[in-house]
Amino acid sequence: MSTIRFIHTADLHLDSPFKGMTGMPPETLNELRESTFTAFNRLIEYALETSPDFLLIVGDLYDGEDRSLRAQRKFQEGMLALHEAGIPVYISYGNHDHLSGNWTRFELPPNVYEFPAEVAEVSLSVRGKDVVLHGFSYPNRHVREETISKYPVASDHHSFHIGLLHGSLAGNETHAVYSPFTIGDLQSKRYDYWALGHIHQRQQLSNEPPVVYPGNLQGRHRNEAGEKGFYEVELSKSDSILTFIPTSAVHFGRLQIPCTRIHHANEWLAVCEEALLSYASKYGPSVIDVEVLNLDDETAAFFSQTVEEIWLDALREVMDGQEPFIWVQRLTRKDMYQNRENNALVESVLEQVDSWSTDEWKRVLGGVYQHVRTARYLEPLTEEDISDLRDDVERLLLNELPTAMEVNS
Image 1: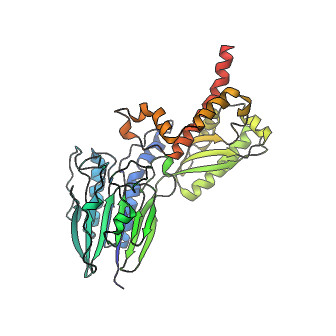
Image 2: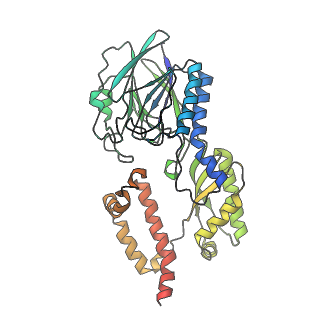
Image 3: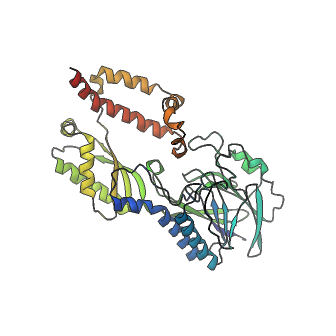
């Protein structure tokens, strides 16, 4: 059976600054900031080892429209290695690295084809089989209108037709909505594969034809938890085989640690250390949110003697110097709000907060999301973000309100 084999990746975000990692030791922060390059190198190494017919990069190759010199140099080096191996690369740029950005350009080798601002097609031959790629690059940062109508319908059923599209499923607001489409829109083009980008969670939206988000190569914050990587695709006219290839250099994750019958700080630290080391042995370098749960009344009382920030600092100190590195980003306790019902004021405020819809949360946070200097760096507000914010509100109320009442009494 005639098949082609290619790599589909997207959302590399090379040279992401990883803002917000306050308190992280400089050497650990440096390893984290190198992680997008490490993940990219793993992509290149895999391609050189397996020699795919071609490689597709579907948007947001760079983290910003200025395309840092270092990111461009690293990318150029990777493309030169693929050029020497005879592997062609096809790129469509997205909202982060759109064509209107202002940057000092690096010349890319001749194996790299960059899609223009208008939907275009490029043809290639793979072992006697014709392949037609369709795609475009963002002319500017905000492509809010649909572009799928500009893609031609495949009329030649003997060739492999592959669409590259950096955009959002219509109605999905987990990311900023750009170049929206429906599954029906994509299926109507009669392509053999749709290579998508923009959503950082890998997922397959359709089987006939395959409509695929590979996710990003490297998680960049706690909402991009889990293993990241790209897809190797083996495609025929009747079947497709997708193989996920992991590349994460640093793993963002969440870890629940049961803690019962603990009466001393050293006991708790030992339990956490064992769980964290086990986690890192499986996933490698990690940035972890720890949730302590299953506390009995006596253990909960023991924990309440010290504020969370001090427990967090102690845990970070225990894990300092471990290889691979483990950074505990957040620490929460499942029982931390068990005495809430005894505080009528806290209960009243939280009832009001719990009644807010997503739109009301956005309205409350409007000053942040509408600020001209900060809005561009913020991802759209998700249900998980709202849940985290709500828990932060509760924690702050319970931690700070007693102190304030004592001062005023």
